[in-house]
Length: 227
Image (cartoon, rainbow, N blue to C red; front, side, top):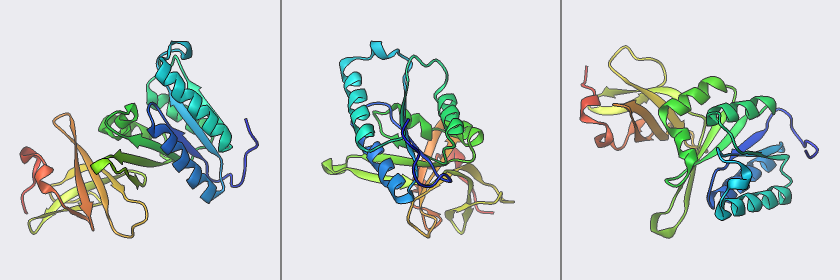
């Protein structure tokens, strides 16, 4: 392990699993760690033993090792042959290394996408409530990469007023939809995404200035009536 630098009140963990997004996440974590002058750790988890990785996965591991050495990352954890649930591994590392911020990626190809699904996210929020989660959403519209970072997910509620759905942060007395709100970093407004579970499936709507901008994405059986 390298010498721990700078501030000890903040420390960042980047979780990577597979593919080219790993490098982007590590570099994003490094930028944040540099800004905060705090230690940076990187974690990858796999159920297979290291010597059973295919050539592509082994190649990514080597690239991440070189990158973490180049960026002076405190430690790169490779949890191979891991039979425990992912959230248990993340919780263990976060607790042992006093992690205060965790960066994970969300993409169609990434196993870490399950971080954003209700049960997994709720478990993490309960097990490591002292940590802020940054979910990096990587999309490719017109071959351009768009990266959005959200703050820690917080419990929130959708209510309906004057024909519009809006977000609330205290349990309402009227009918509501309960879920998790992820606020966009760098905005003073309640902008972000709201995720909620319905019929054992995770639903998502966009929030702009506390209002739902795509109410048609709320399942008909889940919609609220004006009081």
